Image (tube, rainbow, N blue to C red; front, side, top):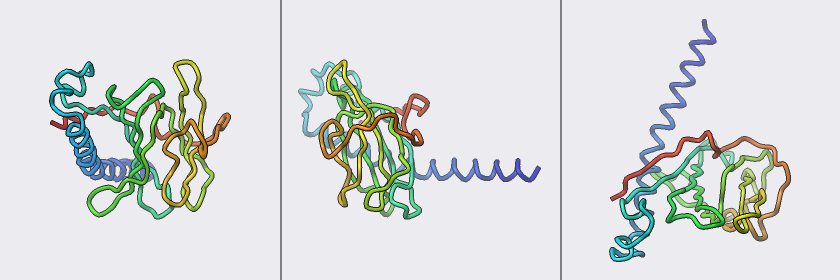
Length: 184
């Protein structure tokens, strides 16, 4: 009985922590999407073939993990709206909690799932593995190592390195729920 009560309390605490992080994450993502809209301009948005862009929707998957060992969980976010993706993959953000919001640690291009949290560390931060595509037919898993300022932005070129059969916890995968944010 005690184990059931403990498990229930842990689940409520985890759910509560995720719920308190979600609004700050949505605030950050809303600001990023609106800045992108300003760059595109209303005419390009109206004529875009991307329905998500025209409707002001942002599709993403997110998870949290302590990457740097400070006891606070960073956000790992893969934006999957078609206007944020290309043939090689989509844009991923690694965000550090700061005050009531987030600060960008690094932004990554051409990322596909799965995204794995590896056991290894570089300069105090956990290494990450992502699937990256070179084209429609060729992909590999790439290890991203923290360099003191951030992680490599493009997982298809050095300093990212190919890694075969990486072992780690799946942060973002097919079982990670897709979220849809209406930002305008």
